[in-house]
Image 1: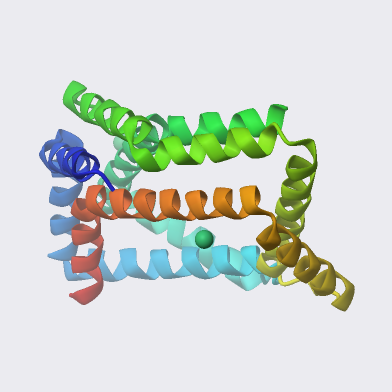
Image 2: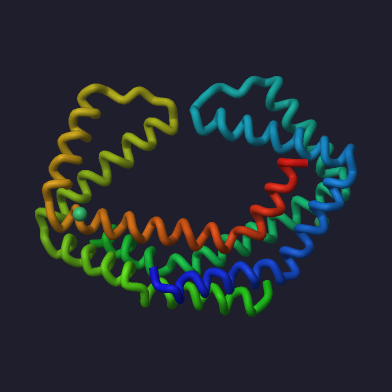
Length: 118
Length: 118
Ligand SMILES: [Ca+2]
Ligand SMILES: [Ca+2]
């Protein structure tokens, strides 16, 4: 691997770290983490989401009770200002990471894309 | 999104495109794609791998026949010099992309990691 490739990757790391979006994400994480109630609610929400995603991926059945529990948690986190803001910040960061990946992986996509079409 | 963040991402794209690893990958893809037999074998191998992966992820049963078919294909592509070299080039590129991602996503990992530990 060329040294240059590592260098530019560290450039992206630095740029992410210095971006407003990252700073806002970090700030909202700190706020939620320092609020015991918010932290517990957010972790519970995350765990339920993760469990449902895994079940879905594995083709396992999701019970009516689980659906209701998940809906209740979604309603709770949406009403919680810090958590709602944290999730918006995560969403923005996730869009950026997706855009960065699309840019950086374009050379590879061109190779794989051309194979599909032929 | 800060302009700087896009700029550095394009820097990575350029560096990937100019890397020896990418050039080798592209060269091997072209060689395989321009050899009708190699291309067909490689596509068939890929399709079988993809089907098995999807079945595994969905928790579906993989038949003995499918396992044998996959093993036969693996043996065939391993014996095929151009395809074997292409797969090695893909493997090297995939390691690099993984390393780049690890570097670039370190800021995010730090946030999520700290949440887990608290
Ligand atoms: Ca809002
Ligand atoms: Ca070899």
